[in-house]
Image 1 (cartoon, helix red, strand yellow):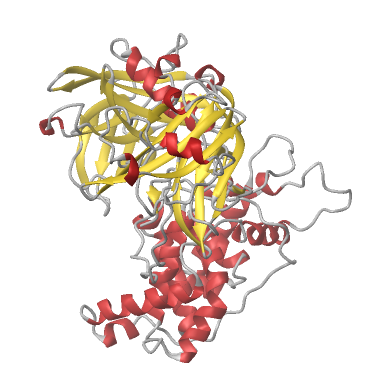
Image 2: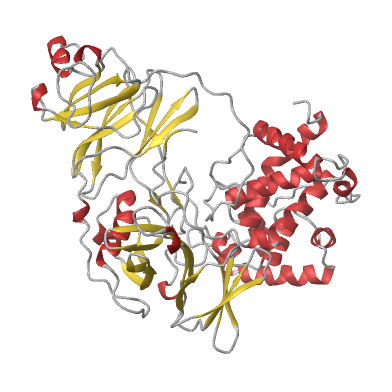
Length: 625
């Protein structure tokens, strides 16, 4: 593009992949790492070509050791789940150990043994003295030593020097599998947009002052990169707006001629056009279109659509295989639109059949359930399925509570749709709540309906029954609402993949909201968990606007008090904790919670997690926006 000169374009294209890996090591979070790199590249744009590499590394180090970098640690859903590693003996892994280092120590370790910098260059980038950097490096090596111990699966004689092993393992983590938000070209477009905005705010001299004389810093590696290993990621930081892609041309999806195994049965199609649509007003039979008519292993299904007063609408018609049209039961699809794919699950609980209708030529992929790893990684794997004329009919499964399935549709290589599936057989009453023991003392007994809803929110996307999660009640308390006293409950479960799953829910009886879910590593001691979450109960169906937002805190019982801090570390409020826990109003700008014991000693600093942007299951929201 015109706004990016050829030399800078070449620098970004060549250097960005390695910078992303370095930033991932510094932040432990893929989204935060990408945003950090974009900010660093924007600042380096005005530097001379000889100074750009130094300026970028300085920006990365400064961002990762700032409060912004320290607080980007909680939970994240990634779209593709990496293959499981070969099981080894229980012990600390490097990703977890690296995440536990102090920010400056972590930056020193990454710059010294991943970027291959000497102590003097590292000290200059971090604005520290050489002795300080040497001390941080020694401290980092000591704290990482246990995670770098040779595996029992390594052959005898494979022992390498500690620093060499660290460099190799850091290279492996930096190459962890996962999807970056921007391609190289999109990154350049984004930088041009940021540069335009920066012109309005910054003088050229102020930016250039950040560039110090120096030579480009070479990358150093002790050994070639081994296969990628998943890094445990956190809640994404706020990212810059993605460059707008040209819109795909509109494609009619729900239109005739009919598709499916019964598409050639004209008498049947004619009869389907006359079937009632239940409580939904239907267009005249002559104006209805049969999009699908098929027999599947779990029943007969038809999709009939039409328009009433310019409003596009339609129904699924389902029943046993061979059922007459008048015996079929209508069901209104979710998010129906002429250009939108639709999906429906037939059968279940247990074995079922998934039906997906989209445009001919589209690629349909299915994720059977949300997957978790023992280190706390969470994501979905989508597998393409066979299609014929835009129709897929594939085997599936579901529990009594609902399907864990997610369907993704791509067109010309771009995602146009991702969502859960319709199923009329879900039975919310099936969420029987086992007797839960409380890990921490709390006032009163939690509302069983709130606890059941919280378990359902976890069990459905994971594709298991609630009892299989081995749930525990971490803590609960009353919540003063305008509709009466509600319940806030924090539950801990054990996912099929090995991670812990911690969810917080607030509500009154059958009405409630999920305040958020996180997935600590499976080796985490439940009694050691510290949770700080914002519950926004000012939502329709739960309470009035005056109910507002509440800060829910539960920590080990030795936590006597807590300080609520803003993004700059300024004190906003002090909380007195009862047995380590409390519910309080949320101060504006709350970002961090620092717990202290009765003697005033600091115990832990925990990010205040905001309300979640979407459900834990990462099903998708329908048509791509």
